[in-house]
Length: 121
Image 1: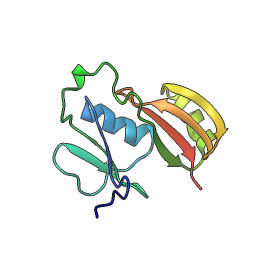
Image 2: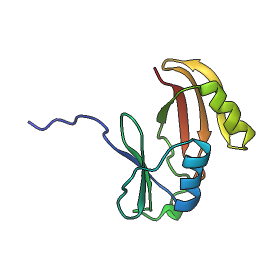
Image 3: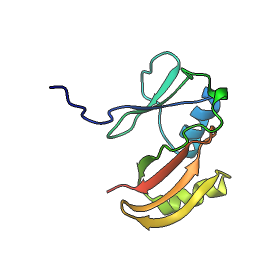
């Protein structure tokens, strides 16, 4: 019998690859992997691989990208990262707080995707 094991790769479709790559590298500090498939940038992450990619559907047809999706990303130093990102003008949608997975805050990337960054164990 077939069995779904759970997520093992996450990729966000973005409208501007260069702007999104700059955001994830310069603001969040992710490092691109040594190899990525055409039309995508895979980042060196632990746990589940994460990437941005060129759209596979017309993004302009959606009125809000990622609506209803909650993408949580583990970080070290959540409060320090929040201050750095807020000072850099990144849109913060939830200020730091304590939750079921530890200290967290939420931000928006250049396409408006909401990312919740939480203190990883």
